Length: 333
Image 1 (spheres, rainbow, N blue to C red):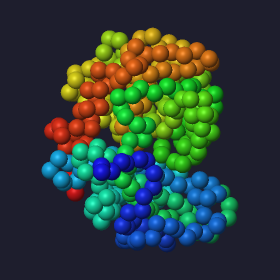
Image 2 (image 1 turned 90 degrees about the horizontal axis):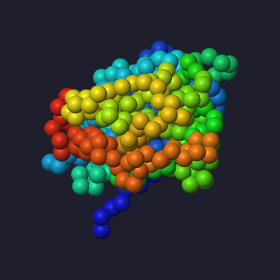
Image 3 (image 1 turned 90 degrees about the vertical axis):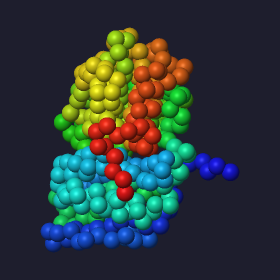
């Protein structure tokens, strides 16, 4: 029987841990225990001093395993750590630790035909005995991985979302980096959205509440009726590696115009297709957006739009090794 992959934790052989103390990182090691013992006064517990990344390992048709743009994850992780006053991990050290963790769990990478992946979660937390609002002197950098399917389900089925009446991130805050507080802020509205029958909540800009920013934990993009790839621009939007890759594919492979501009929630008639994109979501087409009781249905709402489908097939084709990597995005391990 073919194995079905969901999006839940499964213990793998080992995970990676490295500790920072007295101004330096140790060499790190692979361990079998998937639990941690922390000081109850750790800054990660009291002040939210923590960061994480999301990336995947893919099984190619030839059986080899590869990563997708791991150095971009390393750069973003470094930026996040620096923003919340944690010691940054060198990009080469980060990628090498990811590779070693995946290699040690290589038999957990799902088969190519399953279209499932090995999800990889690098993270850093402030630890140690601390009192008072200040950065810790001790940190833990770790990497866990788990085989998963897609987050929202089949990419061909568009979903309905509803606009949140609360904010995900503060203006000029930490919305552009990958910290847990941004996600904690979305839990309540995401739960409410699902209780109301929607797949997720959509967040507007935290200043004027008139412009689209993100869909839950994913970037928003749209295809306009004149064939432009459009995605919002804002200092509080996470810099999505998936979205960045889609823009490159749209421009250089599909020869589409690219626009990073405001998308007003009350002016959506110029959009043909819409979607959410991210490492976990990949691409999830959006059928409709409900705002203040009004439901806007996109023309491509019954099934995935033709342009979104092309983008999805090209992106996942490169990630899984079915389509030639035209820009050195993949790294065989």
